[in-house]
Image (cartoon, rainbow, N blue to C red; front, side, top):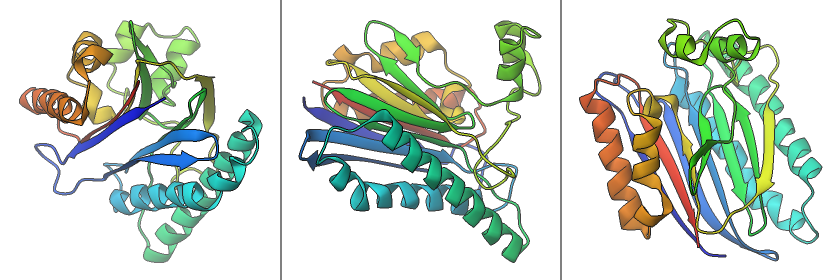
Length: 255
C-alpha cells in the first residue's frame, strides 16, 4: 500500500498565536510502509496552549522513533498500542500540569493521533479534535469528549440542539488541564483508495459535512498538490465565514 500525506494549519482571522500543533510522516518498517499523524489543539481560553500542544506532539513523535520499530518485529496487537499510547497521554497530562503549576499558568490541549498500517489503523482521542475516514461517504471515527456530545448520548439533547447550544465547545477533559485523562481508542481495518483526515474543531465549525466530503473524497486527492490546494480552499472558506479559531487539517490518502 502507498500513501500520500499533507498537513495544513492557519492562525485564522482573530487569534494572535496558532495554538494548534500537528505532524504527519511516512515510516518504512519491517511490516511495510506506515503513516503516523498527530494533531493537538491547545486550549484557546487557556494560556500557552501552543506549549501544551507542541509538547504532546513531541512525545508521540518520540514514540514513533524509539518504540514503534521494535513493535514491528512481531504482529502489532491492539492492546499494545492502547497501553503505550494511554501511558503517553497520562504521563504528558502530569508533565503539562507540573509545567503549569511551576509557571503559574493554565494550559491544556486536545489530542487525536492515528497510526495507519497496510492492514489496520489505531486512533487515540482526547477532547474534540476529530478523525474521519472518507471513501464512499464521510465517516467520523472518533467521538467528541464534550458536554453536548455526552448530552446527546444520554438522550437529553438532539444533534440539532447540540449544534446550536452555547456549550458545544465545553470539553469534558483535555491533556494538561484535567486531574486525570481517559483517552478513547478506536481501531479498524485500513481501506485502500480512501482518505484519513485529522482536524481541529476550527476546521469544521463553518463548513458542512458535504463540503468536507466533496473536497476530500479520494478522486479529488490524487497527489500532494491536490491535497494542499483543497485543504487551503476549505480553510479559506472557514475564514470567509468568520471562523475565529485556529484551523488545522491533516490528510492521508491510501493507494
